Amino acid sequence: MLFRFAKSTKITSLTQDAVQTVTGKVVVPKATRIPGTEIQCACYWMMTEHWTQPARKKGRKMWMPQDARQGCSGFFVEDDTGKVWVSDNGDAMDIRNGWEDRGILGKKGTQRFVSRSIKNGDIVKIRGTVKKTKGAEPADCLALRPDDKGLVTVLQKKKSKP
Image (cartoon, rainbow, N blue to C red; front, side, top):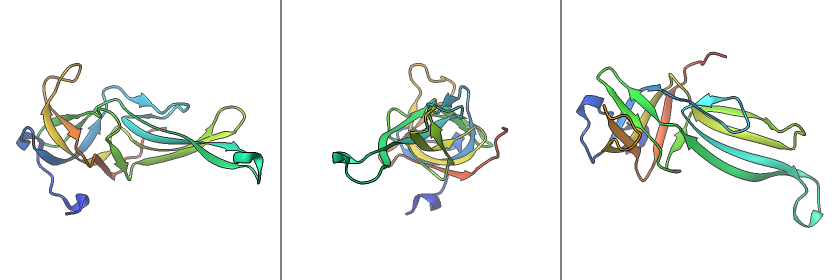
């Protein structure tokens, strides 16, 4: 079954150690910033490119991929029944249909970026394994960790304040 058609489970009905899908609103207690920009978000994926001469110095200059990274500060997904903590334990999260930002990095204009992010107030659909929270995570709820497919789909983008 395709993920976007997967049936969502209410947060109060989540079963521990099961792979389940939740739909709700993103609430970010502490936002993270996309490196080199002023964009605040809950999670991001970013690719940077560098304006350079190709290998062997033959041909014209072009944009060459330089770096790809992602980050997540952890956030809550809330529905009308409760909330669940979502954290990314590494690079398992795949953000689809999120906010897309592009721009130039640095003062010389020789680097540019493209990023996809989840922001506070977005309505998301996330699939993951339900676990108990641990360590520095909030203790008053369950945690949803991305499963082997690591899917996070933003269903509706809320206009954020400038």
